[in-house]
Image 1: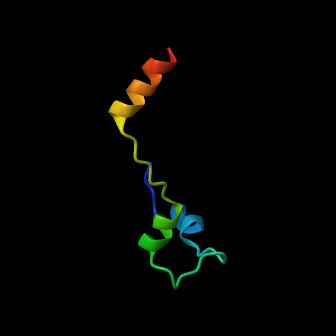
Image 2: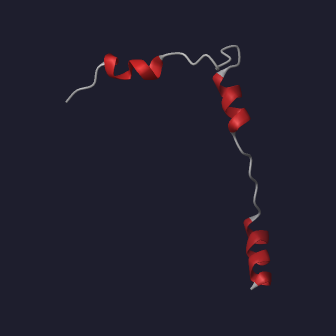
Image 3: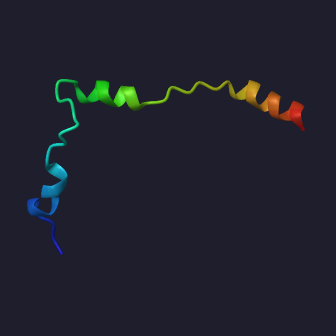
Length: 50
Protein backbone atom coordinates (compact mmCIF):
# COMPACT_ATOMS: atom_id res chain seq x y z
CA UNK A 1 0.00 0.00 0.00
CA UNK A 2 1.33 3.42 -0.85
CA UNK A 3 0.19 6.89 0.05
CA UNK A 4 -0.34 9.65 -2.45
CA UNK A 5 -1.06 13.35 -2.12
CA UNK A 6 -4.73 12.55 -2.64
CA UNK A 7 -4.70 10.67 0.67
CA UNK A 8 -3.76 13.89 2.49
CA UNK A 9 -5.97 16.33 0.59
CA UNK A 10 -8.53 16.73 3.38
CA UNK A 11 -5.77 17.53 5.90
CA UNK A 12 -4.13 20.14 3.71
CA UNK A 13 -7.20 22.30 3.24
CA UNK A 14 -7.16 25.63 5.04
CA UNK A 15 -9.17 26.19 8.19
CA UNK A 16 -11.40 29.28 8.01
CA UNK A 17 -10.85 29.87 11.74
CA UNK A 18 -7.07 30.14 11.31
CA UNK A 19 -5.56 33.62 11.39
CA UNK A 20 -2.84 33.25 8.80
CA UNK A 21 -1.37 36.64 9.75
CA UNK A 22 -0.02 35.10 12.96
CA UNK A 23 3.20 33.09 12.45
CA UNK A 24 2.89 29.41 13.37
CA UNK A 25 5.46 29.65 16.18
CA UNK A 26 3.52 32.46 17.85
CA UNK A 27 0.26 30.54 17.53
CA UNK A 28 1.83 27.47 19.11
CA UNK A 29 3.33 29.57 21.92
CA UNK A 30 -0.20 30.72 22.82
CA UNK A 31 -1.20 27.07 23.29
CA UNK A 32 1.90 26.09 25.26
CA UNK A 33 1.89 25.67 29.01
CA UNK A 34 4.98 26.87 30.83
CA UNK A 35 5.32 24.68 33.88
CA UNK A 36 8.28 25.15 36.17
CA UNK A 37 8.58 22.70 39.01
CA UNK A 38 11.31 22.59 41.57
CA UNK A 39 11.59 18.83 41.89
CA UNK A 40 13.41 18.96 45.24
CA UNK A 41 10.71 21.17 46.71
CA UNK A 42 7.99 18.93 45.26
CA UNK A 43 9.53 15.83 46.88
CA UNK A 44 9.78 17.61 50.23
CA UNK A 45 6.11 18.61 50.03
CA UNK A 46 5.06 15.03 49.33
CA UNK A 47 7.17 13.70 52.21
CA UNK A 48 5.63 16.22 54.58
CA UNK A 49 2.14 15.11 53.59
CA UNK A 50 2.93 11.47 54.27
